[in-house]
Image 1 (cartoon, rainbow, N blue to C red):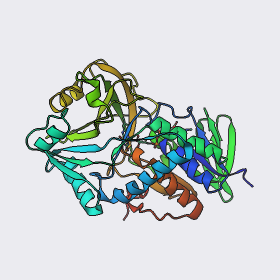
Image 2: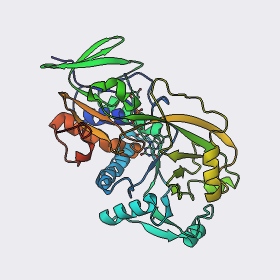
Image 3: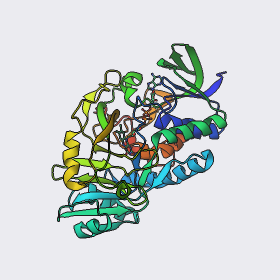
Image 4: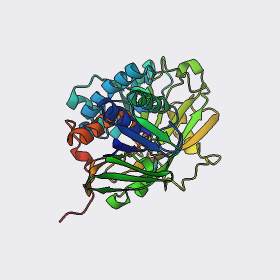
Length: 381
Ligand SMILES: Cc1cc2nc3c(=O)[nH]c(=O)nc-3n(C[C@H](O)[C@H](O)[C@H](O)COP(=O)(O)OP(=O)(O)OC[C@H]3O[C@@H](n4cnc5c(N)ncnc54)[C@H](O)[C@@H]3O)c2cc1C
């Protein structure tokens, strides 16, 4: 008999939620990660991740987001760790921009509470904003952000409290399955269990090579600016998160100042990364890398991009359709995979944990995950 029911490889955003949900269902869980808890070497660091429900990436994501929001609150209650900031959120751009048009479509389809602001209304209500007269904004009151480090820490804490065994600094070198279970090989030895869940983030091409997924790993930089305007104007008590799309369809976004941001505003471009690999990514941010973002923001939120205080690289693991990869491994029914979160996965973290636990325990989930089928990229005759 295996000493564990399930091994979870990777304890970043998704894996930390998986060990929580699996341990709560009474399974004997072993979690392994090569780095320390809530580290900054993967995709789940930098102090803030936007959460929102009106979803320009696709209306089909909305039911998952509604459940994720419930589970974010539940995680805070169970862990006693504050994770979620309710600041409200603005999607800004031309009427036919993806940010506005797509968000509006999903909000209408799912009856999400939202407000539409024309340029004048946007200027009046949020005086830091300088929209073009043709810009409009969708405002969503329930949007805001979560702290990825606190979320991972909270997931791991409640998982450990429910009996999960969590080990860090353990690099998984490979895994196999047989009729009786799974074997996971690490530098310190071999672990056996009945089942395996793999949440490898940007290391998916190494740990899931046999799936042949067409994943692109991208290096993206998060920048922290000190606003030139009054810090109070950018405080989370009065400043929402925003995503702003320009005529070239570039999307820049930013977070307000909050107690853990040292008086800075974090900003970045969505989907503007250079291709890399997780092991060879250039983690040094060169002087001047922030200039395109500064220029983008200067016309839109003029008092935002003051002196650059710090910058940090992160990685996206992007699929061709930018939808996630979640499901049973097609070649190994004891193995469940979750990767390819394509730069927009964090807001889903707790519901992904729930889905992975459903798949391991029941073999099926009540959530709609057809669009995440790991086999959708394979050529079928
Ligand atoms: C700059 C940036 C901004 C983002 N903004 C947002 C946002 O605003 N909203 C949003 O919803 N999403 C956002 N995302 C996306 C989101 O953060 C990711 O989709 C999510 O963090 C991915 O989680 P993960 O668990 O797949 O990866 P990770 O958190 O990186 O976890 C993977 C884990 O696997 C471990 N691992 C890998 N290989 C091995 C091995 N061989 N042995 C042991 N352990 C291993 C790694 O150490 C790591 O801990 C952003 C991402 C970035 C980079």
